[in-house]
Amino acid sequence: MSGRCVVPVLLAVVLATVFLPATPAAAASCESLAALALPDTTIVSATSVPAGPFTPPAFAANAPAQFKPPSLPAFCRVVGRVTPAVKFEVWMPASGWNGKFEGVGGGGFAGVISYGAMVTALNRGYATASTDTGHDGAGGQWALGHPELIADYAYRAIHETTVKAKAIVEAFYGKGPQLSYFNGCSTGGRQGLLEAQRYPTDYNGIVAIAPVNFLTHLLAGELWIRHAALKDPASAIPSDKFTLINQAALAACDARDGVRDGVLEDPARCDFDPKTLQCQGPDTERCLTASQVEAVKKIYAPARNPGTRAEIFPGLAPGSELGWNALAGPNPFPIPADFMKYFVFDDPDWDWRTFDFDKDVATTDVKFAAMMNATNPNLSAFKARGGKIIMAHGWNDQLVPPLNTINYYKSVRKAMGAKAADELVRLFMAPGMLHCGGGPGPNTFDALTALEQWAEQGKAPEKIVASHSTNGVVDRTRPLCPYPQLAQYKGTGSTDDATNFVCAASGAVKTSTR
Image (cartoon, rainbow, N blue to C red; front, side, top):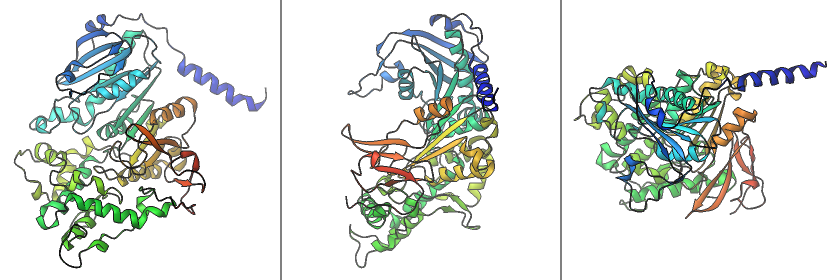
């Protein structure tokens, strides 16, 4: 036998061994799953749902008047509860199952089942599961005096849901899933990365978009922005001035990627100075006061320890200014203050203005870094079983500064080496995309298909095509490129067509006067 044939033959044998199903147990009816016995688990209900429009009962009472129930194939819906209070649901196609399982993540403090993500997964043929992570509601009040609920939210609920869901899938079909993927954004991205780091055998692949993986420092960084813009009333920036700042940043940097399109391909290269907008006379809507200029500089800059000057967390990127109301507007995003009130200081009356960026960051880390953060760059155990990770982040993210995801990606490459990291993880930065979607840039893309092709066919993603729509009509497509490559215009054709761009290292670019 030729030596050239040995490796393919051995590979075929290994693959056959990995994917050869064990002798299946007898499949169960959906309703019989109500009697399924699992450790620390109560099956609340198991119901066959016919094909057609479906509105989860828990959602129906609060659905807006214009809500149109999604159409779903027939499926088995299992509702369960893991001690002490982790509610979860598992949905399994009655027919046409693709043999795979998809766990879906939550957002913010979670507190709800991610029904929308489950709908998408079920319509793709997946068995799927989601959890409220052990509490109800979007605020942080539930954490006060309940360390067991905090642990469930931090990491335990996702793992327990995954284990229980796989057991339910195996009972229903008579065999477990051949492959399992996790898909999440924001908190869901953190949950996915924690799974790879803490429980590397739970999933074969993970999509982690805009992950809040350095949670303790992210929340301090969000409070930094609140301090910069709102602690001193003189620094407050009226909402219409966010548009002014955005226009100036685009005027300074938009053309540098070769295409004037209202989107910065690489905001890290933008050196826009907000001082160019400083009023030369009275304050007007077309300029910034000196205090407002300083606030803008702090929003762009990293949050830093006032004593050591060590970086706490990156700042927001140029180009993201239209979303700054979220953290720097009059009604800022509540999660960072809720976390400090109910998790860190156990004081519902705690005032965000008192946050000390020296000692209070350290206090937060001591209490929650080991439990909450998903910053471990050593993913060797996950890689050893063939695990794959696709991360993505919008450059215009108004809640989670995107440089944090780049920092984590770089830390993995440093810890594991470039070759090993390339076999494990890809990062795609999305110019113009807000937090988890939306924004002026192409922001709708299918990372899961790219992950499937990589994990199942060995085809590492060289690009992911993203689209932008207006009023439901696609009006721009653009490739998202593996970091640090950028989408570069070829020089001819429409700049709204992805086929006219190529992924390449940053360098000389063609230009368009679009």
